[in-house]
Length: 347
Image (tube, rainbow, N blue to C red; front, side, top):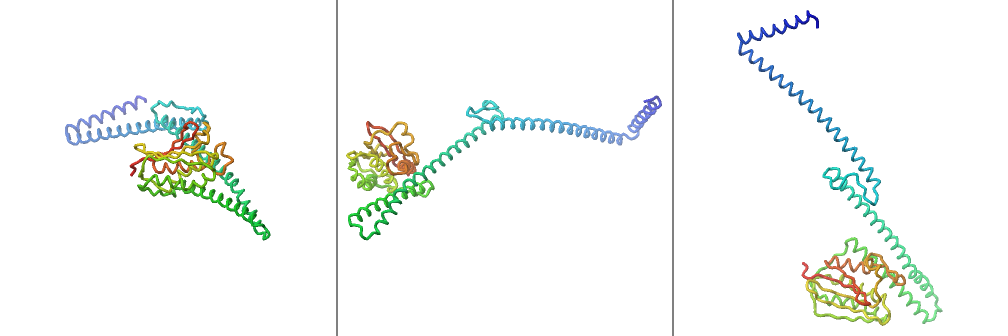
């Protein structure tokens, strides 16, 4: 700025000051209003400028924070994708941060999904095994039905042979009926189609109903059923399905028993619950199989020569569980002991 410009600038400033002083002397009210408005405008303009600057700074900080979060999330996802059995982590579990909490939840979700996947895989294997077992079980009776029914068309067949073939056909039909009934029961149980008819009724009669259903088969195998009861017990339960659960325990004892064996069946009042126990003399179930005997479709090493699908104990447990009870397995000397525990006074 040269001297001429400086003189003009000073002259302008002096003129504004002189005019302002004159206004204060001759027009004090107007000068006050003008001064006040100018001050307010300056304060407002300054405030707006400050807000704009703060907003800009906050946006920048927020962008940096979000970018940092996204970057850490990306690292977390990369680690979780390659996670191993040691549960590798990028954040410490004891950190009280959003990302640490998110990591823990994602790890839990990952574990749940992995378990579900393993469960579904096991279910798939069970179904494949079931189809294989059913095919194997159906093969013989269907072949017998086809073959011996054709033999019976021979009019010259002796009466004795006719009776023999008819007996074989009858056995094959019973086996098919057994397979279909058990498959239907499992299907109804797992699809929720079983509706229990819970009533207060005599449990002793329910136990005897199961004995009646198994008696002929036990007699045919020369197996004795010894039944003992302390007193008559009235209990809220479903008679038909509870009898089915007891029958399955008795049926297993008969199926895997030897001629001359004794099955010990008892019913006892044990305070808050009632016990229906079945003890067989079939030799102790191997230790490594005891945790699996109630699994659906499970068959032990010694059961492969017997007909069945491995669902009897599974059905019994599910039936009892749906009534609020449970089944316990234990070893008593050389006996296998299955106890159905039904709680009393259930509404």
